[in-house]
Image (cartoon, rainbow, N blue to C red; front, side, top):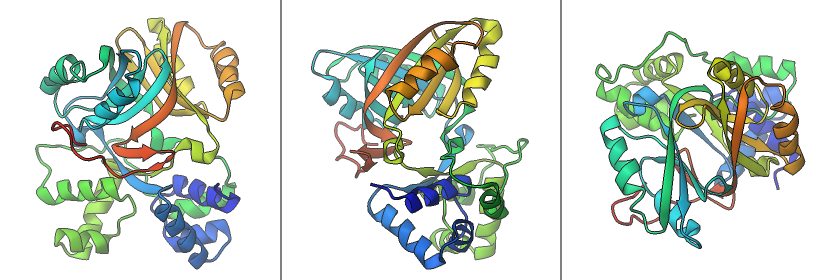
Length: 337
């Protein structure tokens, strides 16, 4: 079980994932050595990692897709494990409700999307049917989700080391140099990597590595974020909710849902649904309040379908087991992740 100080540290890292141990210690009112030990313990226990959320344009040509998979009776577990190994699968979970397995996939280019969706996923043993929705626009993503535990003064201390992305910044895949591409790969795996560490690994001077890191952060190419399974934080219920909405109300509803405290990922999609809300809840009552009370006043909602997560196998390309990070499974049939 995570302690209250553990949760405070995670909340601080959510605000400032790259904050130094000294700044974290000042914000939390404890010693730097205490913060360092606590952070190391959470990492060694496979509970916490700070990664880099890479902008879609730097990862692939085209947007992600939500995929719902129906399986043959008794095949959901084996099918989910096989699908989680696909390198394009960012998130894989066994679910109940709309589907047996839910996937979030990001294909390197649009040409490969047809092969993945029409051939490879349906070809997995036990898969009986699939349905997908193309993400058109994300209103909020996991790096914005927060534990609300910190005071305004603590936020102010942590903000000293924040690099606020410039909305006009961009990543041009055709102009990116090899050093920038390799740095993005390093930051994706370690959102707290220092200029000294990156310089050694890339054979660059520390000052050059620092400039590259700052440029990457300022343009929003990589957004550092804390990865912890929501259940570890007391949010034991997770659901993917597909809403059908009248066209004139789609943007309004999506923006309102993005502000909801449950929202980890809200996107406008093209398909039978209009908006997908991936949310986390402390219990069934909290989710019931969301469905019956919070959605009720929103305009234009005509239908919704809910997939409740039973078991998370992979999230943001990292394997999970019982709420902790797990080693990647051995490669099978060329579908290694």
